[in-house]
Image (cartoon, rainbow, N blue to C red):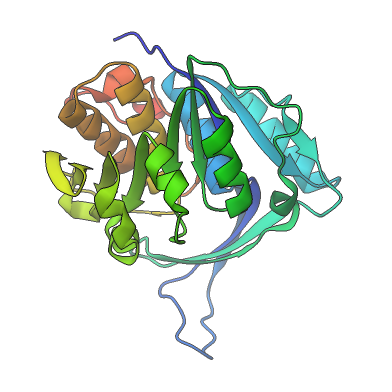
Length: 288
């Protein structure tokens, strides 16, 4: 398979601070015995790192603060193979996500947007042959600007679930959501192409609300589900833009997502996308 995808990710960059505990606390409850870790994150950065490791030519448009975390996040993306020249230095601190993960891999996340509120398209150019992938951890005004300015293929991961302007839904070539987000955004039933993930029940492609493709999930006992949706978005976008049929692209994206949940990091290592076209192949880099 030839990965024919020049991808620009416009989105959030966060420093993840994660506490892993046996179970998630209820409201007002303290749960002890946790393990603390710090790692690169943010939906935009996670998608960019995954895309580059899967084999796409990837650049990141985003913002970090003038702090040590910003330098670390930029270096993590560079190490993943992402072009980082369009990551701006903001006046605010680098965005931070406070994450709790339990022994079943379920999570609770609180995001402090910080520098992500200052992401701008000033001076950014997009080519006709370029695919742009974005998410909703940046301002809706910026999403609307992308819909007006991107001349090529536009993919929107509508997460977290927020109502989208009609012109954004009409313009998007692909919108990616999970089943909860799809139920919260009834306007997506009119979108030209939507991918919906159903966790351990697989994923589907819908055109104007009608299912046109489906792929089963791979059974996994997750370590963490934090970055799985982001890796799925990157893999599906690359697969479809490289010419894979819909269901084949879904299957590959499901396998990439399954590999992600077996890693505690939101930005794990991957093989290139062609290794995920056959379920008998390894799913993480260290198994090669």
